[in-house]
Length: 330
Ligand code: PMV
Image 1 (cartoon, rainbow, N blue to C red):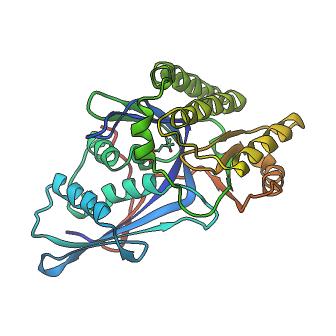
Image 2: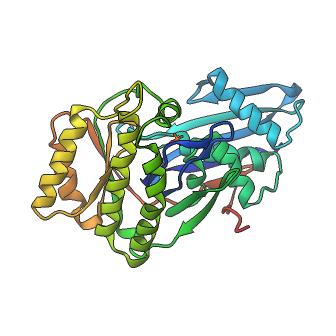
């Protein structure tokens, strides 16, 4: 085992994934299109330990058993001998007001760190497949900028998407509530399969991906915001129409959406999305960020507004030395 440190960044889906085609292998029912963000990251280290001992820590505390079991299973799939000891430590460096899931950055960091520590030369499919097993959104944190993930019969394939003007893009996260969500995405996705809207969601999803990709290529931000909001609201309709129903929004979420609508009526440009939680992520351009931030921060109930730009692929150190790592082309 080598000592490895990996910092992987969070990503936000503009075209959402929701639902699994194969829960056992975590194969998504639909594709997704995301942006990796700067400054919101999970740092994971793997270090050799004597005597075959294994240690799993998250944010400085022992990991929950099911989480540690997932890392053990990953080590098994990477053919790490059960007698080999190591310490696996993961810490989320997310600003307090982030209100963002760390499953994507955490999953990507875990796979890259363990694979490199074990000296496994994974190919692109290996990295994408292993990250996908940890979390449906994790493969997208293996790359910087925009990424598109498309399901296959037993996993997914991923492509980086070039976007003119990427550097001028900003994401503001308006935090609508403190604390953890009540229902995790895994559980809510499982019940969503019985929503009467699930089939139409799957059937109409590819068109959204194509529309978003074309908008990115053309640098047409308003078209991108529009399809992002459409995908977001369709996604939230699924848990809402499941039994038992789940809604992730709070009154503050709705108040933020109202504020976005009025700001746009007054000439600001930007688009919103929400994940499996109440926080609103607002995509806009750098020159309007200050105006948007003022608007969002003024909404009653908003606890904080965080700003992020597009982020890069994971950063890697091996045996204390910084190395350049990128997802293999094939
Ligand atoms: O990666 P998971 O299994 O936590 O699911 C993420 C689901 C959404 O964030 C709501 C959408 C997405 O594509 O990221």
